[in-house]
Image (cartoon, rainbow, N blue to C red):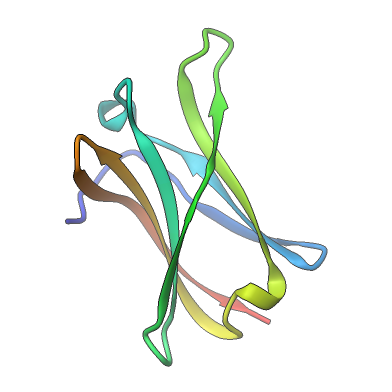
Length: 102
C-alpha cells in the first residue's frame, strides 16, 4: 500500500556507500513503528529491504531515518527506493524515488 504523505526521501553517494535518509510524516509514527528502506533493481525487479536507524528530535520523538548501504550491495543502474513504515503489522510506503546508482 502506498500513501501520499509529507514524508521525504534523499539518496546520495557517500564514498562507496549509498546513504538513504529522510523525514517521516508524523501521522505515520506510533510507539512501535518500524521503518525500512527497500531497493528495487528496475532491470531485474529484484528487491532487497533493510531496517533503518531512527533520527530523533530533541524531545525524543522519531523525526526521520537514515541508512548507509555498501555500494556493492546496491544494484548498478536504475533503482527504485521505497521508505516503508510498519505499525501493528500494517506496511505502508510513505515515500519513493527513482535514482541511478553507479
